[in-house]
Image (tube, rainbow, N blue to C red; front, side, top):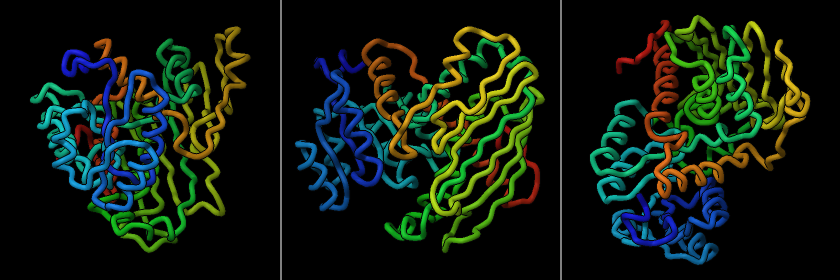
Length: 350
Protein backbone atom coordinates (compact mmCIF):
# COMPACT_ATOMS: atom_id res chain seq x y z
CA UNK A 1 0.00 0.00 0.00
CA UNK A 2 1.32 3.42 -0.88
CA UNK A 3 0.84 4.92 2.58
CA UNK A 4 2.60 2.05 4.36
CA UNK A 5 5.39 1.95 1.82
CA UNK A 6 6.17 5.64 1.48
CA UNK A 7 4.87 7.30 4.61
CA UNK A 8 3.45 10.15 2.51
CA UNK A 9 -0.12 11.25 1.95
CA UNK A 10 0.00 11.33 -1.85
CA UNK A 11 0.71 8.62 -4.38
CA UNK A 12 3.75 9.84 -6.26
CA UNK A 13 3.77 8.97 -9.94
CA UNK A 14 6.46 8.99 -12.61
CA UNK A 15 5.42 8.85 -16.27
CA UNK A 16 7.71 6.96 -18.65
CA UNK A 17 7.14 8.01 -22.25
CA UNK A 18 6.22 11.60 -23.09
CA UNK A 19 4.54 11.13 -26.46
CA UNK A 20 0.98 11.21 -27.75
CA UNK A 21 -0.87 9.67 -24.80
CA UNK A 22 1.17 11.11 -21.91
CA UNK A 23 -0.85 14.37 -21.60
CA UNK A 24 -3.93 12.35 -20.65
CA UNK A 25 -1.96 10.86 -17.77
CA UNK A 26 -0.62 14.25 -16.73
CA UNK A 27 -4.13 15.67 -16.65
CA UNK A 28 -5.56 12.74 -14.67
CA UNK A 29 -2.76 12.81 -12.10
CA UNK A 30 -3.07 16.55 -11.55
CA UNK A 31 -6.86 16.28 -11.23
CA UNK A 32 -6.70 13.99 -8.18
CA UNK A 33 -5.74 15.36 -4.77
CA UNK A 34 -4.21 12.05 -3.68
CA UNK A 35 -1.83 11.92 -6.68
CA UNK A 36 1.31 13.86 -7.49
CA UNK A 37 3.41 13.86 -10.67
CA UNK A 38 7.03 13.73 -9.49
CA UNK A 39 9.00 12.79 -12.64
CA UNK A 40 8.87 12.11 -16.36
CA UNK A 41 11.20 10.05 -18.53
CA UNK A 42 11.81 9.72 -22.25
CA UNK A 43 14.80 8.51 -24.25
CA UNK A 44 14.19 11.44 -26.61
CA UNK A 45 15.71 14.34 -24.72
CA UNK A 46 13.53 16.99 -26.36
CA UNK A 47 10.33 15.20 -25.34
CA UNK A 48 11.50 14.69 -21.76
CA UNK A 49 12.65 18.31 -21.45
CA UNK A 50 9.40 19.66 -22.88
CA UNK A 51 7.23 17.54 -20.57
CA UNK A 52 9.35 18.31 -17.50
CA UNK A 53 9.13 22.03 -18.18
CA UNK A 54 5.40 22.07 -18.91
CA UNK A 55 4.57 19.88 -15.91
CA UNK A 56 7.07 21.58 -13.60
CA UNK A 57 8.66 18.30 -12.60
CA UNK A 58 11.91 16.35 -12.84
CA UNK A 59 12.98 14.91 -16.19
CA UNK A 60 14.98 11.78 -16.96
CA UNK A 61 16.39 10.39 -20.21
CA UNK A 62 17.53 7.05 -18.76
CA UNK A 63 14.91 4.58 -17.54
CA UNK A 64 17.30 2.91 -15.12
CA UNK A 65 18.05 6.21 -13.38
CA UNK A 66 14.33 7.02 -13.38
CA UNK A 67 13.55 3.77 -11.55
CA UNK A 68 16.12 4.60 -8.86
CA UNK A 69 14.18 7.72 -7.92
CA UNK A 70 12.91 6.95 -4.41
CA UNK A 71 10.19 9.57 -4.73
CA UNK A 72 8.32 7.46 -7.30
CA UNK A 73 5.66 5.06 -5.98
CA UNK A 74 3.98 4.27 -9.32
CA UNK A 75 5.41 4.11 -12.84
CA UNK A 76 3.01 4.90 -15.69
CA UNK A 77 4.28 3.31 -18.91
CA UNK A 78 3.29 5.29 -22.02
CA UNK A 79 5.94 4.02 -24.42
CA UNK A 80 5.68 2.04 -27.70
CA UNK A 81 3.77 -1.18 -27.10
CA UNK A 82 6.69 -3.52 -27.63
CA UNK A 83 8.53 -1.96 -24.67
CA UNK A 84 5.75 -2.37 -22.12
CA UNK A 85 6.63 -5.84 -20.81
CA UNK A 86 10.35 -5.25 -20.21
CA UNK A 87 9.74 -1.85 -18.64
CA UNK A 88 6.97 -3.16 -16.39
CA UNK A 89 9.09 -6.06 -15.16
CA UNK A 90 11.98 -3.72 -14.36
CA UNK A 91 9.63 -1.36 -12.54
CA UNK A 92 8.27 -4.23 -10.46
CA UNK A 93 11.80 -5.34 -9.59
CA UNK A 94 12.49 -1.77 -8.48
CA UNK A 95 9.52 -1.98 -6.11
CA UNK A 96 7.24 0.34 -8.08
CA UNK A 97 3.56 -0.15 -8.74
CA UNK A 98 2.80 -0.07 -12.47
CA UNK A 99 0.25 1.38 -14.85
CA UNK A 100 0.71 0.37 -18.46
CA UNK A 101 -1.05 1.62 -21.54
CA UNK A 102 -2.70 -0.90 -23.83
CA UNK A 103 -1.81 -3.43 -25.00
CA UNK A 104 -0.10 -4.54 -21.80
CA UNK A 105 2.24 -6.72 -23.90
CA UNK A 106 2.67 -8.03 -27.43
CA UNK A 107 2.01 -11.65 -26.45
CA UNK A 108 0.48 -13.64 -23.59
CA UNK A 109 3.81 -15.02 -22.35
CA UNK A 110 5.10 -11.51 -21.74
CA UNK A 111 1.84 -10.57 -20.01
CA UNK A 112 2.24 -13.58 -17.72
CA UNK A 113 5.82 -12.53 -16.95
CA UNK A 114 4.58 -9.03 -16.02
CA UNK A 115 1.89 -10.44 -13.73
CA UNK A 116 4.42 -12.77 -12.08
CA UNK A 117 6.95 -9.96 -11.58
CA UNK A 118 4.31 -7.80 -9.90
CA UNK A 119 3.27 -10.65 -7.61
CA UNK A 120 6.85 -11.65 -6.77
CA UNK A 121 7.74 -8.07 -5.82
CA UNK A 122 4.49 -7.33 -3.98
CA UNK A 123 3.41 -4.48 -6.24
CA UNK A 124 0.24 -3.79 -8.20
CA UNK A 125 -0.06 -3.91 -11.99
CA UNK A 126 -2.82 -1.88 -13.67
CA UNK A 127 -3.72 -1.85 -17.38
CA UNK A 128 -5.32 1.14 -19.13
CA UNK A 129 -8.74 0.19 -20.50
CA UNK A 130 -10.38 3.56 -20.17
CA UNK A 131 -13.59 2.70 -22.02
CA UNK A 132 -14.74 0.49 -19.16
CA UNK A 133 -15.24 3.68 -17.16
CA UNK A 134 -17.46 5.47 -19.72
CA UNK A 135 -20.82 6.16 -18.02
CA UNK A 136 -22.91 4.51 -20.80
CA UNK A 137 -20.66 1.42 -20.65
CA UNK A 138 -20.97 1.31 -16.86
CA UNK A 139 -24.78 1.35 -17.14
CA UNK A 140 -24.66 -1.43 -19.74
CA UNK A 141 -22.52 -3.59 -17.46
CA UNK A 142 -24.91 -2.94 -14.56
CA UNK A 143 -27.87 -4.08 -16.66
CA UNK A 144 -25.97 -7.20 -17.69
CA UNK A 145 -25.06 -8.02 -14.08
CA UNK A 146 -28.70 -7.54 -13.09
CA UNK A 147 -29.72 -10.21 -15.61
CA UNK A 148 -31.91 -7.83 -17.59
CA UNK A 149 -30.82 -9.29 -20.95
CA UNK A 150 -31.80 -12.84 -20.08
CA UNK A 151 -29.94 -15.25 -22.34
CA UNK A 152 -27.25 -13.43 -24.36
CA UNK A 153 -27.61 -13.83 -28.11
CA UNK A 154 -25.14 -11.61 -29.96
CA UNK A 155 -22.44 -9.06 -29.13
CA UNK A 156 -20.85 -6.70 -31.63
CA UNK A 157 -18.20 -4.02 -31.68
CA UNK A 158 -17.61 -1.76 -34.64
CA UNK A 159 -14.55 0.49 -34.91
CA UNK A 160 -14.72 2.70 -37.99
CA UNK A 161 -11.86 5.10 -37.49
CA UNK A 162 -9.38 6.87 -39.72
CA UNK A 163 -5.62 7.04 -39.36
CA UNK A 164 -3.80 8.73 -42.22
CA UNK A 165 -0.47 7.41 -43.40
CA UNK A 166 1.12 10.44 -41.71
CA UNK A 167 0.02 9.07 -38.35
CA UNK A 168 2.03 5.89 -38.89
CA UNK A 169 4.97 7.80 -40.37
CA UNK A 170 5.36 9.98 -37.25
CA UNK A 171 7.52 7.33 -35.55
CA UNK A 172 9.42 4.34 -36.91
CA UNK A 173 7.75 1.95 -34.45
CA UNK A 174 4.21 2.71 -35.57
CA UNK A 175 2.54 0.09 -37.73
CA UNK A 176 5.18 -2.58 -37.01
CA UNK A 177 4.51 -6.10 -35.78
CA UNK A 178 7.18 -5.98 -33.09
CA UNK A 179 6.39 -2.63 -31.50
CA UNK A 180 2.84 -1.61 -32.39
CA UNK A 181 0.51 -4.24 -33.84
CA UNK A 182 -2.37 -3.76 -36.23
CA UNK A 183 -5.91 -2.47 -35.84
CA UNK A 184 -6.95 -5.33 -33.53
CA UNK A 185 -3.95 -4.92 -31.22
CA UNK A 186 -3.92 -1.14 -31.30
CA UNK A 187 -7.03 0.86 -32.15
CA UNK A 188 -9.66 -1.82 -31.42
CA UNK A 189 -8.10 -3.39 -28.34
CA UNK A 190 -10.30 -1.36 -25.97
CA UNK A 191 -13.43 -2.41 -27.85
CA UNK A 192 -12.40 -6.06 -27.97
CA UNK A 193 -11.89 -5.80 -24.22
CA UNK A 194 -15.48 -4.58 -23.83
CA UNK A 195 -16.85 -7.47 -25.90
CA UNK A 196 -14.95 -9.95 -23.73
CA UNK A 197 -15.95 -8.14 -20.52
CA UNK A 198 -19.63 -8.26 -21.44
CA UNK A 199 -19.70 -11.68 -23.10
CA UNK A 200 -17.60 -13.66 -20.65
CA UNK A 201 -15.40 -16.66 -21.36
CA UNK A 202 -14.62 -17.32 -25.02
CA UNK A 203 -14.69 -20.79 -26.56
CA UNK A 204 -13.20 -20.05 -29.99
CA UNK A 205 -12.60 -17.40 -32.65
CA UNK A 206 -12.15 -17.03 -36.40
CA UNK A 207 -10.74 -13.93 -38.11
CA UNK A 208 -9.66 -12.32 -41.36
CA UNK A 209 -7.41 -9.31 -41.71
CA UNK A 210 -5.61 -7.34 -44.39
CA UNK A 211 -3.87 -4.09 -45.28
CA UNK A 212 -6.12 -2.11 -47.60
CA UNK A 213 -4.98 1.52 -47.87
CA UNK A 214 -1.81 1.97 -45.80
CA UNK A 215 1.84 1.05 -46.21
CA UNK A 216 2.22 -1.06 -43.07
CA UNK A 217 3.58 -4.37 -41.77
CA UNK A 218 0.24 -5.04 -40.09
CA UNK A 219 -3.48 -5.10 -40.88
CA UNK A 220 -5.47 -1.89 -41.13
CA UNK A 221 -8.80 -3.74 -41.52
CA UNK A 222 -10.01 -6.89 -39.79
CA UNK A 223 -13.12 -8.84 -38.86
CA UNK A 224 -13.54 -11.56 -36.29
CA UNK A 225 -16.23 -13.97 -35.10
CA UNK A 226 -16.43 -15.19 -31.51
CA UNK A 227 -18.13 -18.20 -29.94
CA UNK A 228 -18.69 -17.63 -26.23
CA UNK A 229 -18.89 -20.52 -23.79
CA UNK A 230 -22.40 -19.33 -22.92
CA UNK A 231 -23.52 -20.10 -26.48
CA UNK A 232 -23.72 -16.43 -27.47
CA UNK A 233 -21.86 -15.24 -30.54
CA UNK A 234 -19.86 -12.09 -31.21
CA UNK A 235 -18.67 -10.06 -34.19
CA UNK A 236 -15.74 -7.64 -34.31
CA UNK A 237 -15.29 -5.19 -37.18
CA UNK A 238 -12.39 -2.74 -37.17
CA UNK A 239 -10.64 -0.47 -39.64
CA UNK A 240 -8.45 2.63 -39.75
CA UNK A 241 -9.41 3.28 -43.38
CA UNK A 242 -12.68 5.15 -42.77
CA UNK A 243 -13.12 8.28 -44.91
CA UNK A 244 -12.84 11.11 -43.99
CA UNK A 245 -12.89 10.90 -40.15
CA UNK A 246 -13.72 8.68 -37.17
CA UNK A 247 -17.42 7.86 -37.45
CA UNK A 248 -18.07 5.02 -35.03
CA UNK A 249 -16.69 3.18 -32.04
CA UNK A 250 -19.66 1.17 -30.79
CA UNK A 251 -20.68 -1.79 -28.66
CA UNK A 252 -23.96 -3.69 -29.06
CA UNK A 253 -25.34 -6.38 -26.75
CA UNK A 254 -28.47 -8.32 -27.74
CA UNK A 255 -30.31 -10.72 -25.42
CA UNK A 256 -33.65 -12.47 -25.32
CA UNK A 257 -35.08 -9.70 -23.09
CA UNK A 258 -33.04 -6.64 -23.98
CA UNK A 259 -31.11 -4.74 -26.66
CA UNK A 260 -28.48 -2.05 -26.03
CA UNK A 261 -26.17 -0.18 -28.35
CA UNK A 262 -23.57 2.18 -26.96
CA UNK A 263 -22.50 4.27 -29.95
CA UNK A 264 -20.81 7.52 -30.83
CA UNK A 265 -17.23 7.57 -32.08
CA UNK A 266 -15.88 6.40 -28.71
CA UNK A 267 -18.60 4.27 -27.02
CA UNK A 268 -19.78 7.53 -25.50
CA UNK A 269 -23.58 7.61 -25.89
CA UNK A 270 -26.64 5.38 -25.68
CA UNK A 271 -28.13 4.74 -29.14
CA UNK A 272 -30.48 1.89 -28.15
CA UNK A 273 -31.73 0.96 -24.67
CA UNK A 274 -34.70 -1.41 -24.63
CA UNK A 275 -35.67 -4.02 -22.01
CA UNK A 276 -38.80 -6.10 -21.43
CA UNK A 277 -38.77 -5.15 -17.71
CA UNK A 278 -39.03 -1.39 -18.15
CA UNK A 279 -37.74 0.65 -15.21
CA UNK A 280 -38.18 4.34 -14.43
CA UNK A 281 -34.45 5.00 -14.86
CA UNK A 282 -34.55 3.65 -18.42
CA UNK A 283 -36.07 6.91 -19.66
CA UNK A 284 -33.08 9.00 -18.62
CA UNK A 285 -30.50 6.30 -19.37
CA UNK A 286 -31.64 6.43 -23.01
CA UNK A 287 -30.44 10.02 -23.14
CA UNK A 288 -27.06 9.33 -21.53
CA UNK A 289 -23.99 10.53 -23.39
CA UNK A 290 -20.63 12.13 -22.90
CA UNK A 291 -18.88 14.50 -25.28
CA UNK A 292 -15.19 13.59 -25.31
CA UNK A 293 -12.94 15.76 -27.48
CA UNK A 294 -11.36 12.64 -29.05
CA UNK A 295 -11.34 8.84 -28.92
CA UNK A 296 -9.36 8.79 -25.66
CA UNK A 297 -12.45 9.92 -23.76
CA UNK A 298 -12.33 10.69 -20.04
CA UNK A 299 -11.50 7.23 -18.69
CA UNK A 300 -7.88 7.88 -17.69
CA UNK A 301 -9.10 10.02 -14.80
CA UNK A 302 -11.44 7.30 -13.58
CA UNK A 303 -8.71 4.67 -13.79
CA UNK A 304 -6.39 6.79 -11.66
CA UNK A 305 -9.19 7.21 -9.12
CA UNK A 306 -9.52 3.42 -9.12
CA UNK A 307 -5.76 3.10 -8.56
CA UNK A 308 -5.93 5.49 -5.59
CA UNK A 309 -8.80 3.52 -4.07
CA UNK A 310 -6.82 0.31 -4.51
CA UNK A 311 -3.51 1.53 -3.10
CA UNK A 312 -4.79 3.73 -0.28
CA UNK A 313 -7.94 1.86 0.74
CA UNK A 314 -6.93 -1.71 -0.13
CA UNK A 315 -9.84 -2.10 -2.56
CA UNK A 316 -9.85 -4.32 -5.63
CA UNK A 317 -9.31 -2.35 -8.85
CA UNK A 318 -11.23 -3.03 -12.04
CA UNK A 319 -8.22 -3.20 -14.33
CA UNK A 320 -5.46 -5.16 -12.63
CA UNK A 321 -3.08 -7.32 -14.66
CA UNK A 322 -5.17 -10.46 -15.00
CA UNK A 323 -8.05 -8.46 -16.48
CA UNK A 324 -5.74 -6.96 -19.09
CA UNK A 325 -4.49 -10.44 -19.93
CA UNK A 326 -7.97 -11.69 -20.86
CA UNK A 327 -8.46 -9.31 -23.76
CA UNK A 328 -4.84 -9.72 -24.88
CA UNK A 329 -5.33 -13.49 -25.11
CA UNK A 330 -8.44 -12.91 -27.21
CA UNK A 331 -6.54 -10.57 -29.55
CA UNK A 332 -3.71 -13.08 -29.93
CA UNK A 333 -6.20 -15.84 -30.73
CA UNK A 334 -7.72 -13.64 -33.45
CA UNK A 335 -4.25 -13.10 -34.92
CA UNK A 336 -3.50 -16.80 -34.82
CA UNK A 337 -6.69 -17.44 -36.78
CA UNK A 338 -5.69 -14.81 -39.37
CA UNK A 339 -2.33 -16.49 -39.79
CA UNK A 340 -3.55 -20.08 -39.96
CA UNK A 341 -6.92 -19.62 -41.64
CA UNK A 342 -8.43 -21.84 -38.95
CA UNK A 343 -10.74 -21.56 -36.00
CA UNK A 344 -8.70 -21.10 -32.80
CA UNK A 345 -9.81 -22.35 -29.38
CA UNK A 346 -9.20 -20.69 -26.04
CA UNK A 347 -7.38 -20.85 -23.71
CA UNK A 348 -4.68 -20.11 -26.23
CA UNK A 349 -1.64 -22.36 -26.55
CA UNK A 350 1.19 -20.17 -27.85
